[in-house]
Every structure is written in structure tokens, then in C-alpha cells.
Length: 97
Image (cartoon, rainbow, N blue to C red; front, side):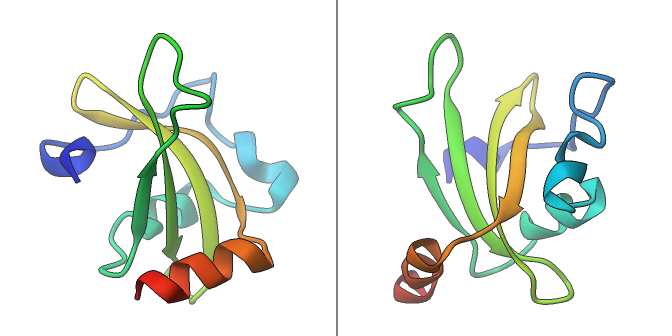
């Protein structure tokens, strides 16, 4: 996916660090999904305004499946939100793999 082709890291600041605690997702877990060889990435045109957003379905090292919304800013991935995937999304992840 072009969105991650030139990615050189993650962008964490006070605006998004620990933001997903309400979903019991740690920032490190979210990062792990980007290294899942079977991850699925879709453009998110519905929520893309001034910047393009993407949806990633991927597994952590502990096999937890997460739904992550992100954007790319200055060659860094900025996480918007991350949570456990639902049944419909599990089927989409499995269908693609």
C-alpha cells in the first residue's frame, strides 16, 4: 500500500498518545499491527477530509485483532484510533487472507 511505502516511524504526541486506553489498546499493540504480514488496509474516504485516512485490520504479536484508523504525516504514521475488531470485520480480515 502506497500509504506505508515510505513510512519511517510513528507520530505520537499529547494529542494521540494513550488515546485508545478506553478501548484497552496500548500504543505499542497498535504499532504491532502494522508489521502483520496479513494486515488489510483500506482507504477511508468517508472520514478523509483535509488529509487522507486509512483503516488497517491487523494482528498484534499476541494474536489480538485490531481495527485501526490512521493517516500519514511527514512520512510518519499517526494513529487516530484503535479498537478490537467486530464480527463483520473479522470476516473481512479472514476473507482477504
